[in-house]
Length: 249
Length: 264
Picture 1 (cartoon, rainbow over the protein chains, first blue to last red):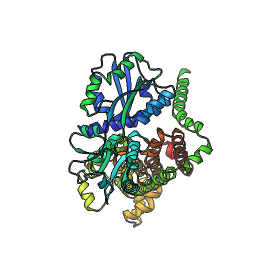
Picture 2 (picture 1 turned 90 degrees about the vertical axis):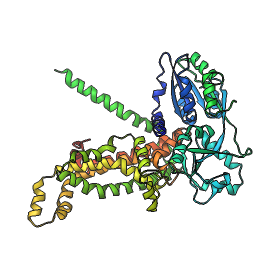
Picture 3 (picture 1 turned 60 degrees about the vertical axis):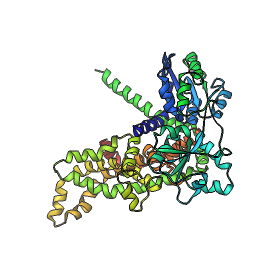
Picture 4 (picture 1 turned 120 degrees about the vertical axis):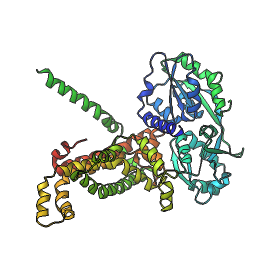
């Protein structure tokens, strides 16, 4: 089950690069481009959305933003940060973003791992998989590491074996035993079905992870898109996000 | 019927436009200056060098193992041969993500042979060796298929003559069959080379993405897609140029007939 989900997500990720699928919005069909960390939550709630038939497209937030900049027009863009929606808003490509959820960055390890804390990440022979610098999960991770003493963060970075283009890649490397630890959102650990354990980061290291969404300019279903964005803070999707472990903004 | 030739010409025009437009667009968007600049960027040359090295290693394995295997399949009949050929060709039609998952399930750290691989002191996932494995897996059927066809089309009397003259089969294979099948083998090598250079999904899933170790050119392009589209375009242009050069040099070496009649 989990493997097939991973495979289909990676397929989506790969074909998302081809892009135009997302732009093919038809009447009564609402196309939502969302950060892949929301896959489980939004898949669960979107079928209950009454306004339109919701079609979800999940990928890295940055990649979805790049698609929008290349002229792809989904109706809704929901990102794993506020920076990208703000940028798109300034460029006139997105309505004023609405903050709708928060997430927590944690250290994810296989459930029988001996790794207990941030300090262990720099240990000899520890293999780390983290997000690539260009995706939000990767920039949050580097934000955390930058708050550590220089020697410690250098030691951790030296253990990085893969810079993954999205969270699913990190989780996959961990559940397959290819990597020993990674930094992901707590919701991803919850979604991994008990195979992974989340180690909380010390409060002083924790980055502020806020998700924001907006209606894409030129959306084919602007009213339904607005309703969907509002539903992220109040309604079925808000509840599904809470169940998946997201916090309220 | 004058309409039919017109229909054929229209079909060719449509196919040509559809197939060349995206490639042309890459070059429209990146000037030669951009191309050179993008190669000076951190990671770009690493990716290119890694792609070339991993592809060369994969090709070496494919040629050394694939050539005799293809020869056997082309020259012997045995029970279940059709099944064997189908199995060998299967990766040809597998989506890259399936190849990635399959490799993880087979030789990944938690895969069915993961323990054995680990016990042998070999580390594949997140290592260059893993990239080579992924490339070999997806590219070898392209070569083996082509090599089988090449060996099968060699006039058997050539080999028989060498046998009558007292040469062993091994000697006949090396001195007669390989030279006679060479155009087809070269075409197969080029196809496998192109497939290996372009491999993306299986590499990402099985080997990960790390500069200089596992981040091949396609992975570097994907990494730049969101942050630096121009640089992604430029790296793509380099890949197109290399692939075109391979295809062209093969055509020049053997004349256009051999590739033109190649199946697949």
